[in-house]
Length: 291
Ligand SMILES: Cc1ncc(COP(=O)(O)O)c(C=O)c1O
Image (cartoon, rainbow, N blue to C red; front, side, top):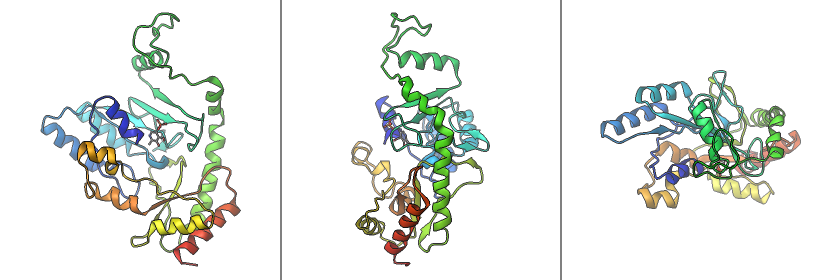
């Protein structure tokens, strides 16, 4: 919800495009068509907000081309993808700015909060001022030039960043165990990694169940075995707030809706052992009736 809600906070209107069924990221052909169609009707399109879903980079080459063609700002939502790389380049370094998030379910956590990054000097000065009660951007302590906030991250929390490589490697290892174990299990599709994703940042481990399998019944059977799973993620456009405000309904984004009915996030964190992964996979096979 955070990705779309931040647009509402600014009084702007989020416009969605459907996803690429394999990567779960926005479909760039649909994006190009949507921007063109909006522009043709005189709609003032301002910015693109690509979300690197589940730690897999969007096609940033195409997205930046579309942005250049239409002179749009790009803000990358890299909240689920710290450390991921698209064709050898880190996510968060393509757009004009990017956000990262450090909630406890993320690759790195500071409890709450996140980070804003930019290569634009003017924006960097503005952001530093905004996070610091609007203090003058020359650093004068008691001179407040704009309406700012206390959005500072304390230094103890920020020091977590030193551990990021270790944290990412541990998650990578657990994801590899899952993939090795689940590849070839009937009814289960392991995460697709695009050849252009030169580094995946594992946020969650989400499998897709074959069409026709009752995902919620599988979740119930796993829960009975003490194995929690989550239906990541229900579509934003079908949330009550968005239905009510914009009139969205089922059928508006068919790929998103189909995938959302079938995805299942398995227990996942960097300290899971291989035996625990095996326990989850066995239980999943049993729940699917394939064992
Ligand atoms: C895609 C995405 N965007 C943004 C966020 C940041 O959310 P919040 O501002 O609630 O920390 C998250 C994390 O939950 C996320 O997964």
